[in-house]
Amino acid sequence: MKRFALLFAVVALALTLGTVSASAQNGVFAPYVTAGVGVQGGAFDYVTKTNPNFAFGGGIESSTKHFLLDANAVYNTANNVVTNNGYTVNAQASGYLKLGHILAGAGVNESIANLSPTTYQKLLVASTYQGFHPYVGAGYQTTKYRVIASYLLPGKDATPGERIGNVNGEVFASKHLRLTGGVSLDSTVPTGGTRQLGVGASAGVKFVL
Image (tube, rainbow, N blue to C red; front, side, top):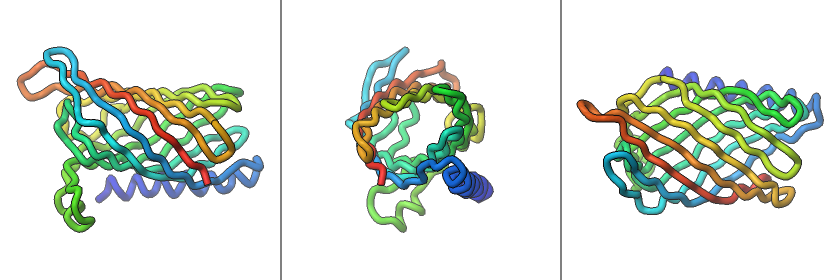
């Protein structure tokens, strides 16, 4: 419960700062929805992959002259080949300082796994906590695209020795439509085993309202 309270506090702070920053810099304070599909494959001592993972979610973003603030939640349908956890929800909040075209910042990420795909009530009851991590990130943005690489720092985990790195990009196709894509590396150390690596790739769309 404390973890959720901290995450919600960060989200609220991001949204508050976003409102102030947008007002000061004539920036945009806009909600958005996302949808996409991806695959994940295992490496090292085995090679396998999940069924296609369908993801959908939403969030709110404030992009001004000096700051990029974002808070979002995404629901994923497929199992992760490394952790064997399926039907996951990832919620995160982040803030980046813009230094010309360069972005530098940090955020927090909360993951809940093994969610029931049936009813909302069962979804809450059947959930298994997976992890809570701070993370750092850096990126590059122009008027045409944005690319951000992030690394989750050690945090609270149910998965032994988990390390996660992500590279996500957006192409600004129009005022409201963006094309998205990403690559992720997710490694763990099973009890008594050697480190295993999962590799994921995804593509989708983002509608900014």
